[in-house]
Amino acid sequence: MHTIKEKYLAEVVQFCDDGVFPNNSLPVLFYRGVLDLPLVLAAHVIKSLFVQNGWRNIWENGIYEYQHYHSSTHEVMGVLKGKTTLLLGGEKGVELSIQRGDVLIIPAGVAHRNLQSQYAITCVGAYSQGDRYDILYGNPGDRPKADHNIHAVPLPELDPVFGLRGDMKEYWTS
View 1 (spheres, rainbow, N blue to C red):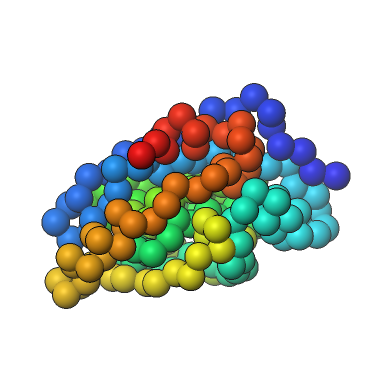
View 2 (cartoon, rainbow, N blue to C red; view 1 turned 180 degrees about the horizontal axis):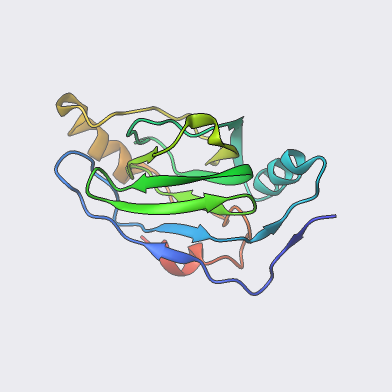
């Protein structure tokens, strides 16, 4: 059986446009160790939680080793196994260590990359309202269309972990 820690505050990380990556005025939310996952069927547990809270278009994989972002949707990642360090916000951004049981919510436009091997970690990922995602790399031709897309992405109705009770309602406002 899995449990979600009921009293839990997200770590909040804010990024500004760095000239290459647009990032977002919405902060990254990091729920460190929020999931107590079972030894078997852990992926199913994470997938069910995300779907229950309206986050769909689910994938299960590692995290890319190259800097990228999504301009068309917000992304959530629940760590299924392994441990790694991510770089968020661009080349001069913030390093964040993540491991099994952590959940990371990344707003549209926020650059992210794995500083170790893509396969050092396995995540279950999903997108707000099941939106289709794009992958952009910080190329000069990406903007201003990417900026327009990011501003058009609606706020999710529910936090992917806590639903109506999550920190998303406090930190993600229009």
